Length: 156
Image (cartoon, rainbow, N blue to C red; front, side, top):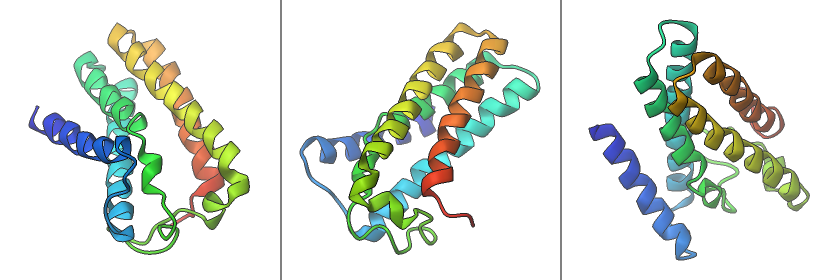
């Protein structure tokens, strides 16, 4: 429960700055924050995967899906400001330069919208407790992640 409060507080701080139209932090901070958010999402995606591939625990899946949904809807795009295409947060950023090109804006919007849609649906489906439906939705959510990674994330 303490982790959920920390995540909510962190997101609230970030959302407050975004709502006010302010970009907070230096480039390194923005890179570190988005890396942290993506790692948190990855951990929660792994939790869902472990449940659909092993012993299913509805409560764990709901918790994980809610975290993914919260981060997906946190307006994290505000952390991709000019100057954050290079540099280091916790490690070197893996975002490709194409991400920042004006001609990528429409595609980014479509990819982000698709991911948000699937993350929102994941939370709804998780709440039903239907393991088969969760597994199917988890596949859709994973594909929406992969679509952006394939286009805009460098391999390690």
